[in-house]
Length: 422
Ligand SMILES: [Zn+2]
Image (cartoon, rainbow, N blue to C red; front, side, top):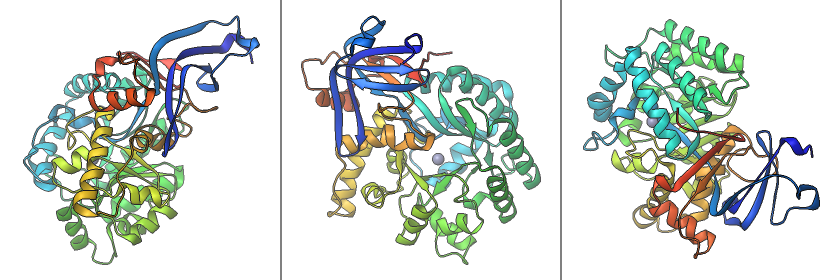
């Protein structure tokens, strides 16, 4: 190893290689070269003896959190409108707020606040919906790039069943999408573009066909919403009676399977949809806070995991009221208990290690080798001063997930570099 490029971090390390159990090393070492982990060990060998070590003492070193689904343009609405279900909530609160991003000054102000709050919450990677506005979305790209966090960002597409003040012309929507693809899709930066049809009801057949062509031509990933709420699902069936199910509508346009895709929610998917998800590498962004807030239901997360489908956690702000994935992880654990108590008593509840896996390596897979402390993984990490060193590492992590404060997160790293507020 070329010693000059190696950074060594020491501390109480805990992570999940597999969902079923934690890996932990008290007073262990992580050797990082550039953006990647070279080695993780209990003892340093002779060749490292004279190298400089950053010693975090008995603080915890955990992987950075991954937020697989959130809406930056809804940041100012956090905690608002939880008295409504999805469709009236969109009309009353969400669409009016998103329309404000026409104003680039407003966009810059809110997105700056959002980027710093996201970083502070311990998220190092995220998959983000911006709004339909081209200039505002460009501003969000700039700010996330400055922060050093990794992200996929999508300019939202919506050309039907939307209010007059928040709707696009189909042709312009496709042109703007191609502009972002060309500008960012093959960027070596940590921030990339993702094609983002809002959901089936707001996207015409012409728009979906055009987006699928772009996904095929440039091999770009896709994100959208799927089977969140029964009112929404019925609406999709009315709009597309020719299709067996909701995911089948996305699939018939050819938008799935070109690159990976993230579908947020997946609360009410049927077995045919699960088959499509397996075949087309569809990730589930499980959004427990949002699903409960908007009375959507609870997703069968264990069923997806048992079927080999990739699952991560999404804050889904502002359907979700909390930006922190740490807190959403506790909600995911609670949601799985609600699912077990009220939906399917035969469905086992999530273990803490499984929920933590979803919040790190599960969602991290969408970015490649991210979310774990294994060799060749990118070094995304949080240093946690939890003042709990008398307990076992697993107990400390559990306590941090449920009851820790964001101020316990002392330092943050993404792709080998320390990241700070901008
Ligand atoms: Zn959403």
